[in-house]
Each structure stands twice: as C-alpha cells, then as structure tokens.
Image 1 (cartoon, rainbow, N blue to C red):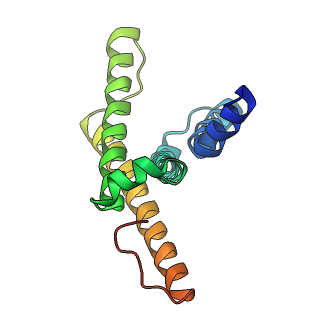
Image 2 (cartoon, rainbow, N blue to C red; image 1 turned 90 degrees about the vertical axis):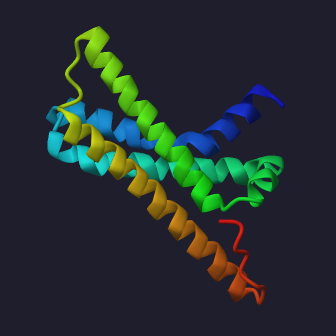
Length: 147
C-alpha cells in the first residue's frame, strides 16, 4: 500500500476524533478553556471514537467477521468505555507528574467517562437503526449481528 493511500485510509477512519480535538483546541485558543463546554466535548469524543471504530470494522472485513459472533454495538461501547477510562488516566497522570490541573475531582472524572460512554452508545444505537432500516428498505431481513 502506498504512503498516500495509507494516509487516505487513516484519515477516513480518524477524521471524526481529530475534528473534535481540533474544534476543542480552536475554541480554547479563541475563548479560553470553558469548563461548561466539557460535557459536550466528552459526549462528542465518545461519539467520534465509536464512529471511527465502525469505520475500522467496515474497512477490515476479517476483524468484522471476528466481531460478528458478538454484538458489534456492545463491542464498540466496551472499547470506547476503555478508551474513556484511559483518557482520564492520562489526565490524572498529567496532573500528577506534569503539574497540570485538568481534573477537578471525582465527580468531574466520573461524568467525563459517563458522557464519553453515552456518546459512544448513542452512535452505536443510531448506526444499528440505520443499518436495519437500509436492510428493510431493500427487502432483506435486518442483520441483528452488525451495525
């Protein structure tokens, strides 16, 4: 695979999380970091991550077949839950070792994780409905194992 083809594939999978981070960064530069926007960006981050995982499953049929035995929605939500927890651990490490003040306490950390998971769950649910609707529209039985 050529370098440019690899970059195109990476962009097709990663544009959504990159877009959320870029928008958050631009708004922080323009208006300063606004804590009241954090819930929105944690929700959007979970949704963007779930969307990227869906794109990865669509791009890698072998991986998609391996996940087919499980519920794709559940796999995506569990994977994004893990990603949200790792993100919060990275924030904790940054506060602890770099002296930043990202986390504002247990409630802040818990709500950040919850909002990311809810964003992922909503995205997985919408994707499942969309796939089932397309299958029904084309006269096929809904595929309950895929998104």
